[in-house]
Image 1 (cartoon, rainbow over the protein chains, first blue to last red):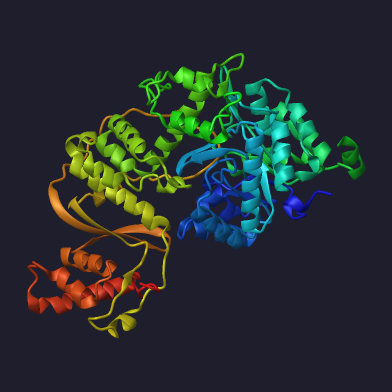
Image 2 (image 1 turned 180 degrees about the vertical axis):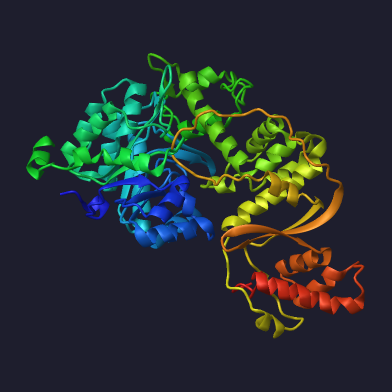
Length: 286
Length: 302
């Protein structure tokens, strides 16, 4: 079954991130797209062109919200204004579920605007799960947390990243936005087998999957979302689908953005893996 | 608090230590500084909570985040203030951005608000703008007004008939997206000429380095000239409109909640406009303001 309670039982298919360079094409050509993912923060404003554009999109397409600054792992409490604006946007978009990252990024009211990794400690598990719960209760829709790409590991860590993710989502009773590109990036940066990660994730909690490209440097990989998806990431995706069954899938492309058709074609490659997953095979693969 | 039994840092301690390191300005060659603000070796700071791997030590791993932070916030400020960058030059803009963001790191969940204190800060720090300081402040003021006018709330405006029914004791409010500016230079045309504006686009992706060095652009020579300007939104686009001094002062007084008659007195204080011409002047202003939708009823509770 493609849907579960963490994605409001939706079978969204394959979508792409809604990006400004594609607006003109979308409005002029009205391409058939299963769904768009929006970055919530780009629309958490009072009025103006971004919201008017979003309303036009909402008239024709399904939209799911994805945030970049909820910072579930930050020790300081979320900004009430942030939560108020986010809920306002949730009501506007009627997003069936909402995602943000398993990371931190602000402390004492100062924001880094980055997705900083968490130490995988029991203290972090408890604090993060509590915050996810509070946000989910406030927003009154299912929340999925996304694993981030990371470039640093902490001496304080007491478990693997996949164990940490599992502990947080079980305690928060929330969904997972499984980013298989982020798993690959972190695996290369931290020297673990990415397939171990995909095999360990609680498959029944996966609400959505992200795919993307990245940039390889001499000593590390950076999650830049500016390239096509590489084969090893497709392999992780294939395994994730094998374990989870078809899940709403989204291609992220944020820099050096090619034409709409090119981005969409890259995303649609996911259909090679999404179709033909018999339920009994999925059950066996878990 | 650190766990006294094994010296492991708490989550809060790790986040404070990492944020402090990430927000430290980079060196001239865009690396992480050797010393933290408290004088400790940054290698020791990094090693106190970050583990090395086979390719990178703790310092190098922390440095990736330090660089990412500055690339992201500097890029965002550059996106919002392209004309200021052109006026002071790429290198000076870089230096003033680093100094500004060090003094005023982001206190908002959205990068949209990153430049909210730049005008105030730049006014107090002429050393970062060179000989074009006053012009730079005006340009920054116009560009920030664009950001605010672009996405601030719009309220139902009063019609001219509504306004005509008011008396001198009435209080009005202005359209939230309307921004009023008193400038030392007529810098609006300069900004419009330089404003090949890219729309802000927040994403979660890492940022690659694409900084361009540049000297200040050759600009048309501007003489000081007191200028009053409004930035406002019509049909989703931001426009600038020159105001008369008296018109600006009246609008400013209305925004501050003065009753209409007091606002007009403030508007015409010291004015060279003859008494007999003022009624026609006011009628003309209100006609234009009503047409542009600038005048609203006072907000509930105001």
